[in-house]
Image 1 (tube, chains in turn cyan, purple):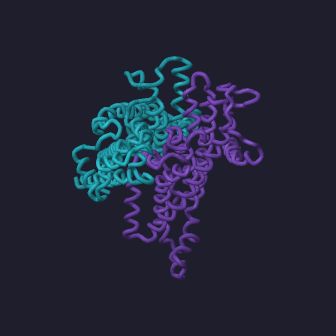
Image 2 (image 1 turned 90 degrees about the vertical axis):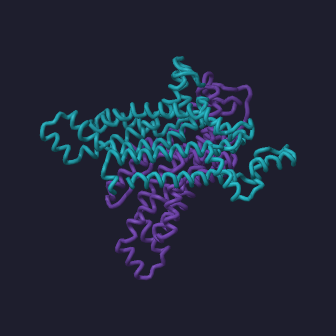
Image 3 (image 1 turned 120 degrees about the horizontal axis):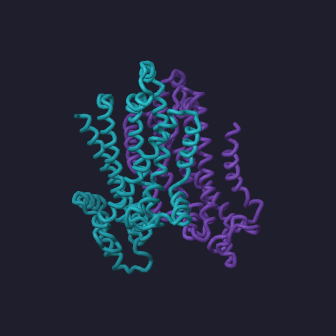
Length: 305
Length: 275
């Protein structure tokens, strides 16, 4: 139990420090942030009004306290452009990113787990070699290239799927394949190496020696142990997935948090950028904490360590 | 060795792109409105883009950009990361505690997200891009160096050097770092590959290298608007990018396997790929 509390406490600490970093982001703007956000044509009165509305006229400690107090009530401030509350903009955009990330993860696991197992079981065969070559290619082709390539093949050449936008399941397919393939590449390699390591252990030889069916040896003995590092990698890859979502959403014009962040950078609507970074990072920290908890549940050795 | 021929060749071509301007007059920004979106042909080997600029010449200019950014970021993050990691592990105490917390903090931001936010806030341009990627990138080296130095600092020969009164910086640089050079070189290889992707990615998003300056990322971005009529605008920089990154990753993999076999002492393998 104390292990669980410890893990939750450290996650809370990390979330707090992430919040501090995000708060200071806006102070990294070279020169005067108000000038940057308003542009050259703003009047002195406009500048002053914005300075006050952002609280930039207050001492730094007061600004930070205000920011934290606001966050505690889920108040991220308001958009500089539309004056809309950022929390309601985020609420509109979050589901699209969640759908994208979840379906990408689903595709990644669907591809990577069988491929990784086949590669490990038939190590050195043509299956293994071609799977690992494909996975190396998957690692090296970034989302912003894979996306247009898939559009070229599936939307333009074959006319099967819509190019971009967000109405319905068909629009979700290309973005989630784009995002999922790079995760699949990493995952397949991890499943393979983890299973290979387990397959070399004594208890696997014992299982074979007592005449167990090879399929049962893989599933009942080897995979059970091989899962653990794989779960860690899935947790860590969710970070790459959320980062990659920013790019993928921009490629496909998918109305999630990532494309919101890029639009806001272009409009210099920095409070929204801050809120996006904060939300995505907090989700990531929470998912990682959850992964650790799963790990602990699956393997009692971790809890004791 | 033979199987590394192709990746090596790709890297050599990528490096040679740096020298081309010295022997040839490149005009990657030259606009030719008669040749807009023309397909690859005898005069323009890779065709022309939406302003009639030569895709081949922009590809070469983009290669220079990616080389410049990836090498300078990797040098900066390697030097800072190794320094911070080594000092933290050696000195221990509050400084090490602080560094460990900082590393945890940076690892809490998903993938390329922090780099996007930093580059977006600092503003476009090559130097801000290098700054943003460097702020995010030192963590991997610091973590790796710290872990390795912690293992090695109690070795007999290090203790002996200390007992003989060798100054600490000399001990670290001459007696300790050579032992961990192998994993650091592997890390640097993968860092170069991930920085190339990050540079192109940020430029694709419009917050890195700005047109008219050429980057493979902004070429892909501009080209993807003409995918239907002129797919070569995306394919040329895309294939170049994928080939270079694939080759670097492949060589990095081989290098790691080779070093793993050679030095079974305490080598920690590469790192999670950032994308």
